[in-house]
Image (spheres, rainbow, N blue to C red):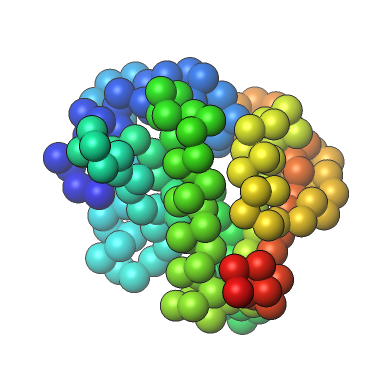
Length: 168
């Protein structure tokens, strides 16, 4: 992603429904979107964790992000996170993106375990995790303080062997 994607990013990141279950607030201006893109760019340049853009081929626009938000190299474990424009919900785009990111994590980052968490009310996100073969491990009670409240989070994971057994 580059600063040229700021308008597309703002288009969906300003929607409170998109940010409802995230740890970030809806973007209030293009400045917020540019700031996020600068952070992502710096992380990429420094070989740190980053999110990748999801581009809709036909529309040729940025419609979401998906990537690693945590990487524990000593334990070969990573955690993924994602967000998608509401216009593209329930069409399989995020499931496809998460599969690509998981494959990257196991093949290129040599991970053994990939995790993802979502707020217990976020049924759609839990559905994505289940569709890609992640297993529900339980609820982490009051796991994170986000937007002034403690959130209970569902924990999902998939192991390298499970993933490659699934895809063949």
